[in-house]
Figure 1 (spheres, rainbow, N blue to C red):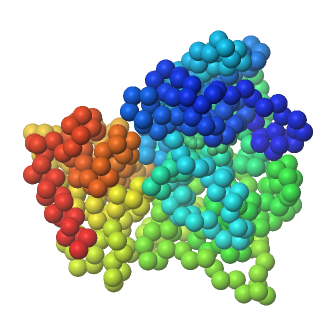
Figure 2 (cartoon, rainbow, N blue to C red):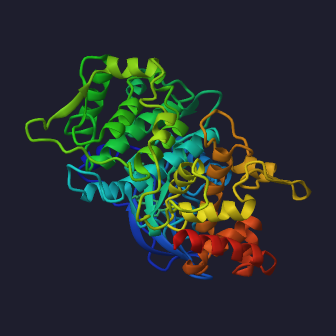
Figure 3 (cartoon, rainbow, N blue to C red):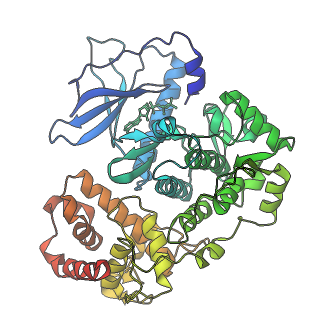
Length: 514
Ligand SMILES: Nc1ncnc2c1ncn2[C@@H]1O[C@H](COP(=O)(O)OP(=O)(O)OP(=O)(O)O)[C@@H](O)[C@H]1O
């Protein structure tokens, strides 16, 4: 929230006070320190009752002045409200907010503790350790997760406001979560007001020309799109920032020069064409030029580029040509104003075919009964979930068991309609605009299937978190889709009444995975 670079510049940063290992905060036992940020320290933790792993962010309030205390209170309230309202498989969850009671440690007594999902590393840790010059391991999965999380935030009416690698957490089993919603603000019409914090390296150039009145700076979804462009470049170019400079300040000046049209955009020459175009669109020089590139559109393009046999390949750059691909701000803005999403979603859909001979694990085999037109839709939807259990084959098996792929299927007595048999009121709570037509319709197969993928991705995470056996997850997810997360967790298995349905799903899955 403050810039890490500025913090690093300080010669003697006083070490913040720390809780001893084994310290109890309500039902949670604190372990080793994971790291510290501008406001507090994050610890490993586990639930005292059943050992469930967690992370606890402790935000001391003792040494803060009244103004700072109010700002911190505001950030925490936002984080909690956001976490409650925007549950999603790619957004880290805050499970509880507690108060530290430690009279023997006055600096921490009364501190606020946020109990969250525990990650294994942040994207920043991975980028710091990466060799420059190529994508990090699992780059596609990370970008899909970040883009999907961001699209969900924007769809739910929130702006992240502090998207950067330190705020992307990587969990066990390839999970990707956006974190740190302290700066997330609900959209008020088209923008939200936030305290003037943020991180230089991921702030859009227009930030510097905005006045920050008493309400703070204006943050719009296009600021997150800019930050995504920077982050995607870092992920695909081994940590390399798209703007040159040895310090964050120098890089931000370079970004401003590009936005004024006095310097070109120089992207890493090794990026493949589609990704380069997507990043250039995200880095369009101002708010207006970025406006056509919504998070939904960006997420769909990331899926299209990274899923299937036509997935992007890093361009091989001959030594003589090795240099930087140069675009001017005017060219990037011009492409945006011409309505260029840099290759529309439909264009990209056309060339994504998820099946190949010798079907990769989890993909839909070519000789299956899954209608051809649905295969790319199912593949894209499944790959948006970074949890390995949610495969195209599992989604196809679920859909077959629900509707036998009939987009007009209906069961009015139980209010279930369409290819994924959504109950409209439940659909609305999770809805994804899968076909990018600006509407979320449970009768549209792309919308219904994308929403199904999102929902089963969340179920999968819920069941993992509840410690249900990994090998049973596909069956449990099928059961959860027919009942609820709570029913499956309470019964710690497939409820008797949905066993015949789950057996059907598992039979189809075995067929697709054969
Ligand atoms: N839920 C979590 N699980 C595991 N590690 C986490 C979790 N949340 C944060 N961390 C890690 O703990 C460290 C401190 O995080 P914190 O959010 O306090 O600060 P930051 O994001 O680095 O900076 P700031 O919040 O000041 O912008 C970071 O290394 C971060 O990756």
